[in-house]
Structure formats: structure tokens, C-alpha cells
Image 1 (spheres, rainbow, N blue to C red):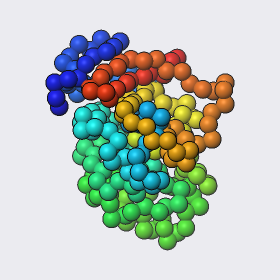
Image 2 (cartoon, rainbow, N blue to C red):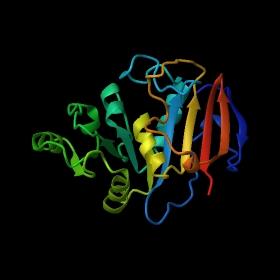
Image 3 (cartoon, rainbow, N blue to C red):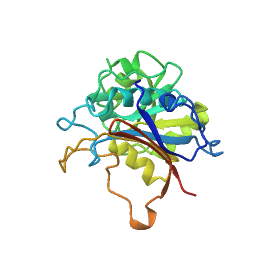
Length: 242
């Protein structure tokens, strides 16, 4: 990392070298009934997750500094959860060996040859309507959990991770549909957000949170914990207000 990371604001009390941002992260204790859940996302200034066409990866969106910070945050998670679109779009996902990795899919259409299933413990969460032959194919590469009828029940996913795998800190890395499920269930305790100084546009392209949207009375409020700047890229951390 270079020498230009600047601390703009930090309410966490951390006074370390800004160049070591996120090497140490102090989280509150998890709730008694589920893991402490945080998201990490890089978006354009207009909130888009990709620079290419629909279905492409986030390649080129965040800087090398953002990539380093992402990997630092991943080291603080007991498990990392992604959606199937994220898995299909990125053939080079690389997670810490100690972290349990999990993917959510509605269709069961996953690239089973992906390194995601070869370099560590992997879980797949899918709905019960998945055809038996697809179930068998997925069970060959990972531990399969069937939760929900027509779509994956995120509450059950979280309970399984908490109860069966003793996950205390869960990192959700999107995409936008998966993120929406967690916001809809009001289970996002913290948001780590990188704002890349780019604009994409495109009403059909994924954003940090997609889905049906939340009704006005259920829109959660977050408090800014820290803001750091490297070049023109902003690194923000928010915590859910009580």
C-alpha cells in the first residue's frame, strides 16, 4: 500500500497508522441468537457494482488498495457468504483458508469446477424445490443445506451458520439481491463501503442493494464510524443504529 491513506474521521477510537486500516477491527460481541453480520461492497459513485455488462465481475471497479482492504476484512470473518451471481461472474475468488465459505442459489446453477469448492470448506444453501439430480451434483462439491421452498430462507441460513458451524462473525459480500435479503430481515449490523470515483449508469445493472425495496417505515438508519481517503477513493464504515 502507498503512503497516501488519510484519516478523515474515526469514531472507533482506533489511532493506528492509516496504512494499516482494517488490519485490526473491533466488533461488538455477537447477539446471543445469531452471528454479528457485516457487509463489504465497492460501488461506483452512482451505486453500481460492475463496470461491464450485466453478469460481469467487479473487475476494475475498486483499486488495488480496495482489494487489500477487502482481504483484510475477510480475515475477521468466521464465514463469508456470497450469491450465485457473484460466484459465476468471478473465477478468481480467493478467501482465507480458515473462513467457512458459503453460497446462496435459487436455481442450483453453480460452476461446480470453481476453486471456491476446492480450496476450503464450502456450503451451498438452496431451496427445497431443487431437482434431485441437481442436489446430487452439488453434494459432490460441498455440504448442501435446503432451506425455504421457492427461495432460500436467509433467516434459516443464519441460524444454521450460528448453530451448526458456530459462526460468530459473518461477512456478506453480495451481490445486490443477497444484500437485500439481509437488509429486509434487518440483520445487517455494519456496512463497509468503498466509493470508487467512477460513474457507470444503467437502470438494469446491479447496485449495492437490489430486490423489492423496503417500505419507508422499515428503512434502517446507520451511523458513520470511520472515513478514510486514498487518492479519490473513499473507505467508509457504518454501524446500525439501535
